[in-house]
Image (cartoon, rainbow, N blue to C red; front, side):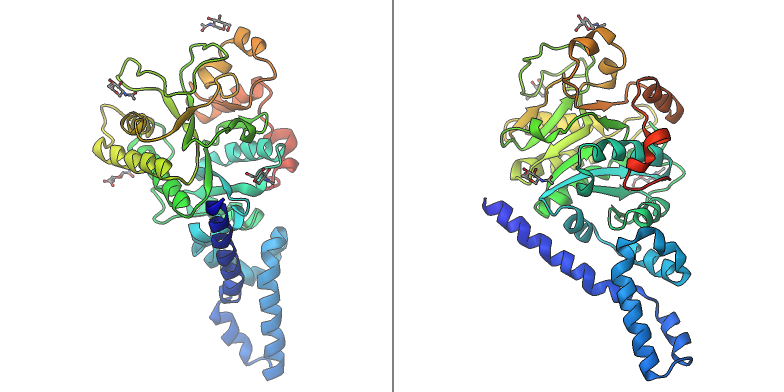
Length: 359
Ligand SMILES: *[C@@H]1O[C@H](CO)[C@@H](O)[C@H](O)[C@H]1NC(C)=O
Ligand SMILES: *[C@@H]1O[C@H](CO)[C@@H](O)[C@H](O)[C@H]1NC(C)=O
Ligand SMILES: *[C@@H]1O[C@H](CO)[C@@H](O)[C@H](O)[C@H]1NC(C)=O
Ligand SMILES: *[C@@H]1O[C@H](CO)[C@@H](O)[C@H](O)[C@H]1NC(C)=O
């Protein structure tokens, strides 16, 4: 109760700030060039018009491109948009649905967004853009829903699974999540190679600190326990870092801090070609005693190794699936082909359902 009141207050201020700064988004160069063309009152009218546009443009996305002078203004607007402002904008309900995306992943972002729109949760989505192209593209079509936390990683290398660039890119995630928790929001993190078939929020029952899914493909009984599973062959668990729900509690923050620490302890090497998932599992292992962890039901949140590979299981658990993860496969094309094959690629026919429209 106390925390939710606290959140609401935090959220109003940045929203108000965002409106106050909007007139500044217009460049002074334009102001000076036009000053000589108009008299004093003409200039006032012009300024009023600019201020009006500054307020309206964010809400009329496509119009933006009609005003060429405004586009550089909107570029600088989004370049300076902070995680704090973005969180206040999308997190009005106290919950933020977060993903982190670089440009090659835009089709997956689109697919994921369509599936979220069908559950009517798109307003809560915050896209953490990992490059400026993604930041501008998303915000031009859907103002306020993308933010870039500088510095932007090297775009060339950031998206190659198993590469050091990919590792560097994913290792920033826990920092973003921790920042959002510190701002007081509940956070739902998703990889964008996921699809929502139902609303996951009713499954986030109780008041645990951290909710997650198992990345194993082996079938479990429907009534499996919700505690952290026992470690597997490598001495650690195989919890997926692909979908995590966090409450803004001390426990959740402890896990994020441990995750950041583990990533620094076991940096990327050519030999292991690791991603951020082992570090997340070690963080869970080492904090398990002090944090309230909750393993989500497998039937609702199956790994790709189960959902896409075991038809028998899929038909046995029909109607119970909530979020599907297209993992246990690498490569953009292979993932898209597989999504298509299973009727989970909505981009071709349903892009009008996305808040981004056609991309
Ligand atoms: C806002 O949050 C409350 C409490 O978590 C939830 O019951 C409600 O459905 C949410 N509303 C929207 C639009 O998501
Ligand atoms: C990844 O991060 C490390 C340490 O910050 C840095 O030395 C390296 O150049 C980065 N590599 C890539 C490909 O981004
Ligand atoms: C943590 O990992 C160690 C080493 O594999 C294991 O012995 C221990 O049971 C794990 N702890 C938890 C809580 O999973
Ligand atoms: C596939 O699912 C069925 C039904 O749940 C299960 O009995 C079987 O062991 C699974 N197959 C594999 C290879 O895991």
